[in-house]
Length: 171
Image (cartoon, rainbow, N blue to C red; front, side, top):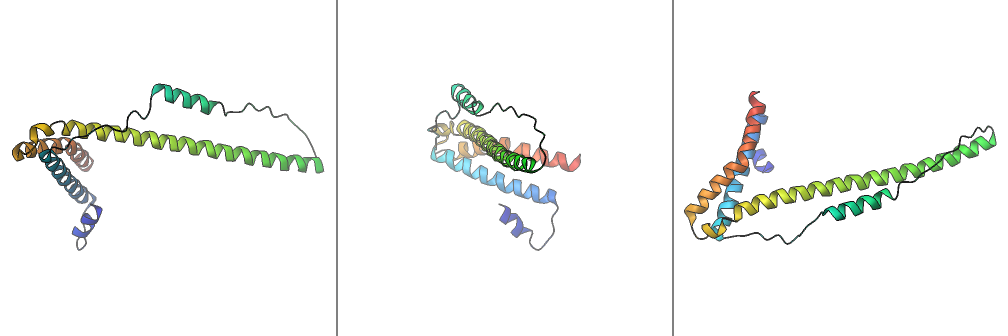
């Protein structure tokens, strides 16, 4: 899609608005063709992934993560000379180890958030496509109905993108 917009505007300069409309139109046409052809052929969807997150699984993971948080009491020390240097080096090593653990847990947190967002997107797209393809039994081998449902669902799922583009342009 990006390549087609770039190729079509290779010899001329288009505004961001024009490129956005062109890209969205290409997506709309591709989605319309995908939906119409799939409905005409009678494609259906099955949920074979199952439940990704359950309440019990989430609670178990949260409890196991909270078990790793340590309770540390750091005594105050005043030291000068060689003792202060040794204590500083030991404190530097301790803070380095603590920073490594913090980076590890932040990484686990971000990976968890990324996986959660992917699961949410999967659910949204799967549910949206399942809503469309539940009409496959009515549209199989019927071109007129397939095109009608294709136009309806393409307009429904792409019109909000056009709305955002026009709102950003004129407001």
